[in-house]
Length: 483
Image 1 (tube, rainbow, N blue to C red):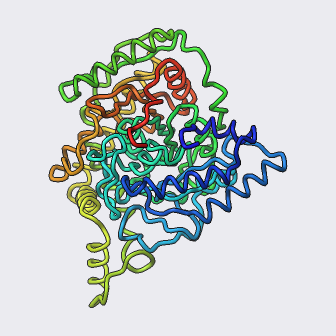
Image 2 (cartoon, rainbow, N blue to C red):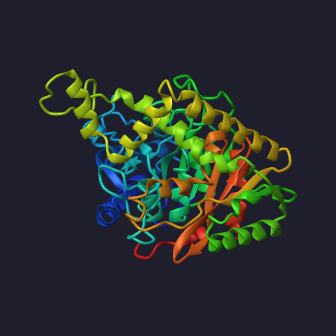
Image 3 (cartoon, rainbow, N blue to C red):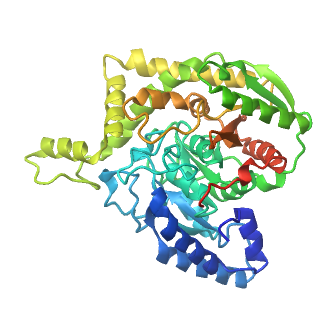
């Protein structure tokens, strides 16, 4: 059962080959047995899962149907879940139980999805390795000595190890796509505003976006269908009709114009990954796609712009965690100032503190124009590059990451080296575009991903291309040894 995809589970439940309760028990037992190696979960919700599974079985018995009805998933631990710990991977929220469900959680529960638990993540989603979590690093199931990527590494490791078929995740600068690439999964970051951020604890509000992590594009289409849609509670949610993502999966790629930016193939890209990307391009050409070289001239400025904008927004968003209203509070404060200082100093980890300080500096009176304002101008240039490119091509293709997953601890002493690993992913967040990573091969036994980017609200096109590619390749079917 654990080897089935979300689509296969939906068909099995519809054909009454097994019940949701039976499947849920199998996966909960598998998590208990294997997750101690991976550390991919922060909280398990066995009682809730079995209750939801029984309810889903009852709904099916009454004639209801639906791809997510009775399907087991997990939520990244920054989606608020009523009465269940929502920690954001931080000591600051270790004791926080949300009083309500995030919109994404509520929508998936209404569709009948079964929540097995909350997955581990970089603290407040700040990181590219899932090593900054208060609950310890997550291990990559393909090699337990390597990182699974971040910040959605817990969701990625759990799905890759076949502990469950799919999970929710979030992407601020690549945190769905990079872990997908590192663990041989398909991960989709939707257009900014496509998925509600209400009840999703914020890192950088103008960049954060929730999305699905699964083994196939077909599964991502199913999960995104349940997540997407307008939400009056979220002022950044866009009132745009949600298409049937599964309906367009089998559209022909004949004549599809794929742009390949020349800037992607610079000295920083591992040549073995470059070779796999070119192999993927040839595969898509066989399916009828037309390849064209394009340019994204301002890509080189994206990382410095992102690492001004994101910390600036983080410093503002995280100011609410002050030891007064909720979350961690220091012991025996001498006065109010001591309460603030020690609660935040003890409650936040090193990476979060670093980004708060960078952000506060960039927003300070003497430096706002020099840093924050300039970064926002670069953001507009990056967006303009994409708009010009999409006048010539339908989608853009390139590597998801410049290197395969690195060893645990390898970049801890050099945060900038870890930041540079986001070079291909952050541009989509700066521009608000949808992006997808899909499996494209292996380097030294570690998975590699190819990234696709599309114009706004063209998630269906990305899923279509990835699905057609996966019908003609088998990278996505490979399973890590021991899982």
